Length: 393
Image (cartoon, rainbow, N blue to C red; front, side, top):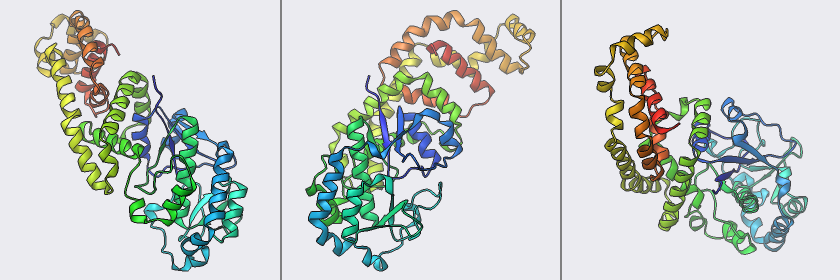
């Protein structure tokens, strides 16, 4: 079974906890590039996710990566200076706040017109070539941060992420919006196109992983409107542990849809992309989810779990037994639990049909999310317990 692991870039700290929670519901692992001496200042959410978030060191890059960049700056230094020389910085606009790194860990530089890269992420030979042509310089506060034109920093970090991802079986993943050109199979020509070509054309395509992430986000929001902002990390981790097989089938379905819709990669407007992805979700997975619910309904799941059933078929003797257990629940809740006990033989008989329906569906993971991650009252909580019993989890 393929492991779906992503490599986050361009920063160390994540900008949004809800984005991290969404990632935890989809990816098997989320890695990030963190220098050994860099002091992280993660949020409580990131810390609580534990080993879901892992570290990759920037010194794990292959020597050929630094050699390509060094050669690039040596070969294209003159034309690069016309646009990216720090001598022109007075003419550059301030980087919008939305495009800056998270404030966690302190500032990465003191000039808001520049993009900054931590010095450990740039090989000495690469920095020497950049500095020689006036394209980069260490920050005035010391040598920990190397400042340069924001686009030069963005292209470098994307190239670094793609290189590490390629050699470690990861998928490069960013929370920035279409900020790069695909640089797989790094070459002087691709770098020249990214930094010296027509910027409007360079920015015109999203990467497959960006489309994949946007698709997952649309599917989760459209079909399973759970409030990620207020969803606890403990609940996310428990959900991940309970349904790894369903998650892997859904990952395969996402990957298959993106590969079969190559035209999605040519959409340059994020809003248009989201609209088209929503169309795909509505036409495909929404129907699959309805079909799965219908199939479960055909074996009597909905009837078994309905509130009417739980309140009208209550065996009085069982209600009394629940009262003797001292559960401290009201009459309706006691009735719900009582039916659970009385209906155990019926539930066991349905397990096989339920498992077959779930195993055949690419959206079983979405169904699980809908059932498990929505806010529930006491009766909904008891109903969820019955479902888990029948479903075998």
